[in-house]
Length: 485
Image (cartoon, rainbow, N blue to C red; front, side, top):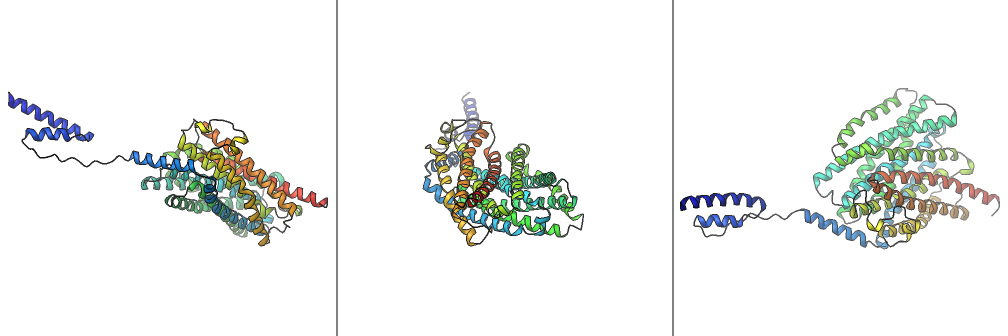
């Protein structure tokens, strides 16, 4: 009977030790078993592996604290250099547009001017959205794991290739339609050149800028800089210049070979046939799969809004009274889109830290805040809005000086023009920053990710406001000079 009792105890000890090992508590069971076998030595415990989750949570709390404690000076210093770099890129883009507006393709196919804000706006619709999405992922620790990082990078690149190809094609169709309304007809060979130029430009620009964005975000994360502050300005600095240069070069080449009737349609079909490949790659990520389904409305609506800005540019750029529109349009549009993209990205990151989609955090509990809350409250987002608004005047003064030194625009930068221009820029950025606060809150309340939905609307609105206010600025200066003031 005692022998049976010992066997039962041994069996129970083995069962408990198996169960204990799974929970990391097998020490006492091992001791019981060894004492029954007459062994007095201490048991060998398995190495304790610290759980990873608290480390991730600790990192997240650290980043949250840094974000909350970020001072106005810190925000300004991080934003200033990329902002000025972006502005100089826009100045160079303006010089390019001012130069190429006299090329044959721009004189014959004037609808190319309608494409300019729409394609340059892809920087806001795609690259800035990519930068905001990856910045939020980097700040919240989602890109710390190399496998997860590679999945996010490849899926996001494939996504923007799909969106760039489709939106580039739709932008060309919109330009053809708007041109047909003003001209009273469509010429098929010119429409083919326009479509092929738009799709090719959008594809190459999206790929090159997307790669740059990924390098900038991963690099800034490694050196301890907030990617929200630097990624979107760098996208802006390269986006306008690369896009306009590509559009001018590609459209001029296709226009030169327009007698080969099948060349432009063939180029267009080639890029459209690549769409299924990019869709397969993008669908590997659950997050990107959702954007593929629901993320089309903002980029298409934004493209439509930007096309109306392009229509204003098309009607004014050839008017002698508006000489200089070509060189100033990329600058005022780019600066406004750049600053509002930074703000939208920062607010989105804040919401991802402090709340869940559908519920606003306590400090942002107002659904429709007034401008005083947006610009004069004590929160970190209000602080960044003030910093970005105050950067408008000094930044534009630097850019106007650069344009004057480069002798661009063929228009005198007088005191009257400078005052009107700065008022237009301040009004544009003030409206954009306030609308950004409203749109990001609205998207979050609806359960939508602001990184994917807000920036396209904001940059497109910036293009429309910038082009419209700039045209009014030229008209006002003309009236002032006519009065001899």
